[in-house]
Length: 176
Image (cartoon, rainbow, N blue to C red; front, side, top):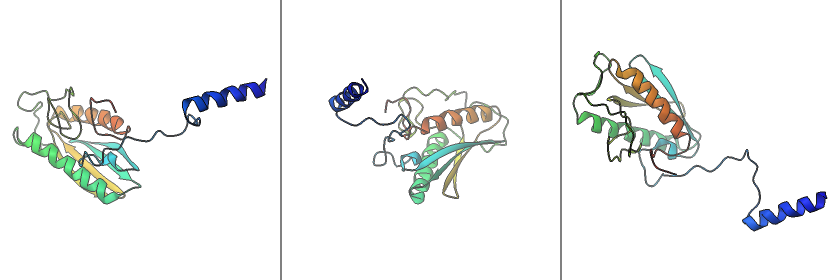
């Protein structure tokens, strides 16, 4: 009976066009390297963590891959973020007690992707904030600074984005 079971499994694998892979095998991450120069996790071997701070939080990207490429992409991410948010007024410095920027709640993510190509919000992070990239061992830290009540919202949003980054893409609201 065991021989019949093995034959059945072999037949099913052959019919599906490949060998069975163990459930613990990692699924290859989608690569957006050519299409998204502002996505640090598009570099193979890159992971992200979040560090909270009193004025905001930081996305910390570390890699076993091309460190210089991760740093370039993170700097581009911060630059796009600041360009978008700066167009709406002064960027937060963490000192003001104010909340929402100019009465806008920018926390919705409908149709917005992490690369800055957005139908609605036009940027990566919905909470009005300033981004600064700085080198760390094996990667880069992108620190986001907000004011007042926006700090907690920013921290929460960055944790959500970091979880999404684990899929290996910066695209939000799109199937990969």
